[in-house]
Length: 240
Image (cartoon, helix red, strand yellow):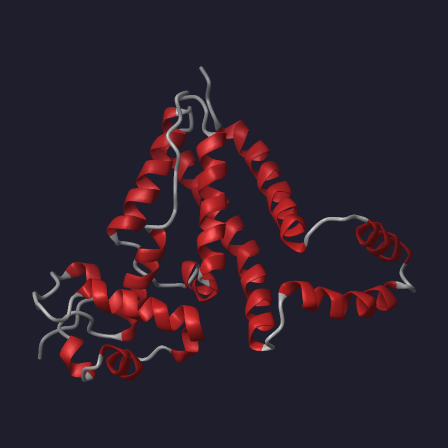
């Protein structure tokens, strides 16, 4: 009996003129974006591709392998700008973090996959992004191991915060309401609930008085935490 590969990246994709790994991944992402992680199955993917599931098992042996592929494709959307100053690690790190957040919010189902235990992060997009960011940090003065830990810390913050954002957006989508309508519906309820609690009451009153969009408020909150994480990581850098 042939032993199954532990990861899709450990074997070469089969050649097929009609069905390619790229087409399978693009179709899977389309289903995921439209209906979420629960809607994706090998049977459903076969129906979307107009072929029996067995026809694409030569390309993707299981749903787990398919998930590896779609996660790596999301990594391809992360942008890291070039920096003219080798010592400037904050600019590309901030840009990478915001780009990762944007990618997850474009694909809310992906939030839980980035932190999934046991997932093999061996895809070329994943590894290139990781290696490039570690290189930026190392060049700026972080020892190699510290650079890896710093990147992991930033990524954990981004995925953790964005997971909550993605869950809220998915909830609104399932209820068929926009973000603005949801806030308009829930805000009076939250203000009434906060009345017995003086600090929360003042916070809600202050926030209600500001003319800031929901998107801008979420962006500001995200940037606040990210900025302080980078401030803390600065101590790991040697400028010697």
